[in-house]
Length: 122
Image 1: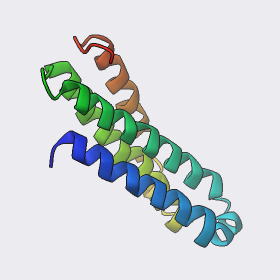
Image 2: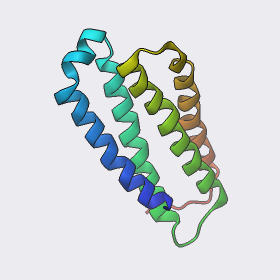
Image 3: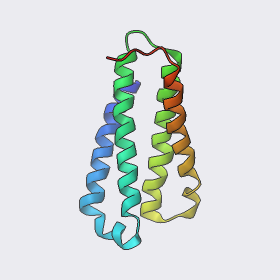
């Protein structure tokens, strides 16, 4: 699977998880006080999945090493940031808490790395 496919699949998953949280899990998440965490996870998941898709599409003709690093960082951020927030919202397992900021740093690092890449806007 390439980054374009991963971005498309991850976008679909983000929408599905957002809908699951809003429609099926909302009573449980609200009762646990974790509904906002779920919404944040879904938002960051979707934003970075779409960014991943479009950067991969942009880079498909002339790949740039730094753009690929940015894509890996975003992919890791989706797993660490959104994944840990989804897990925290469902389980309230405290060991997931320290993982979330690592995912946030991965998102930030990806955007900073992209700043120095030679990627051209559409």
